[in-house]
Image (cartoon, rainbow, N blue to C red; front, side):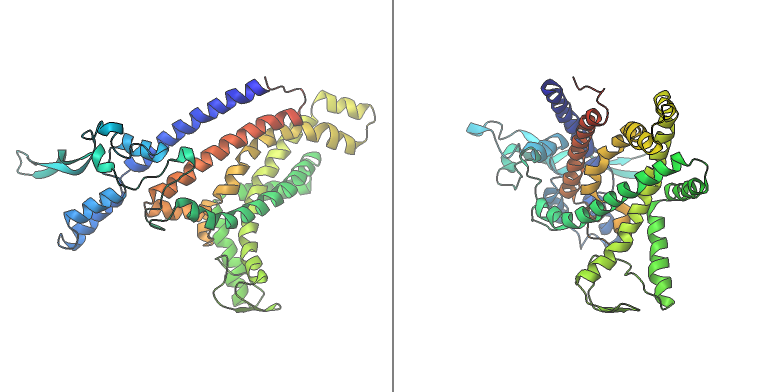
Length: 397
């Protein structure tokens, strides 16, 4: 077991490093960054409002004036932060503050200006005094560049994390408690009325995207119910800004436990329904496969009670494939539901990721991505260990 865990930890480090390199590279190489937005704004508003110095300051704030490999190592381990000891490498070029421009004139008369070379290079000496994190390897995710400018990314994450934890924790727990019995009963009563109904519900839940259910839920339980004079659920946010009145319930004070619970109820219900739709079908299929095996038929032939056959002999083995799905639970607990949180304006990690991505807050996006990668790798390792618990025939060597 010790040797297996050591090998797995080395593999996890390698996978996390490759994932970090790929994610970081793709994030900065895709078009539409802060410089592109600034240039587009200057084109629309005129050059007088946005000068070259403004562009240069933005380039420096996002460290876009540093070449990508050095930018990555500064984010990863906080190096380079200046010349090497003894002033070695002070004049080494690690970036370009102002790219050179060349005017191209084509035979058809068209003129195009392209970047080539570097007019103002950035050297190792120029990095001395610039703010740099200690690196994510040492648990420092750096500073937020846009959303909480100048504040640690960790502070931003910690303000959103509680909302995601209790939302996703409740929905996942409810999903497991409901989906497994439904899947088992559907398999035992195959082709019964209950099985047909749950199959139809599962197909509906699995075939439509989550934001569609979110919008339907808001229309049904909030808008239509309120217009009809029935008790309704608040359509979004985690906490209300003013008191409101719900028929049959009375006045609900903003920020009270009842206010938070009512706002939590619809979002949690949507996520639970989506999980149940997928997981119940998975458990049903796995149970049907196990129920047709010889040892189950043998147990029945020996006169073992049907409840014991299902719960002791069939259910345990059928859960092995289902355990594989649980590898993503750690990630789901942390990352939340990206689209559904945005639809309900829920201030969780999922919405934070969408906001950070749209506002080019690279440090926040990369922090969330790398945490998700690490949690997924840990989840896979835990699932591998759980295999030995569910099925004693499996050995980790």
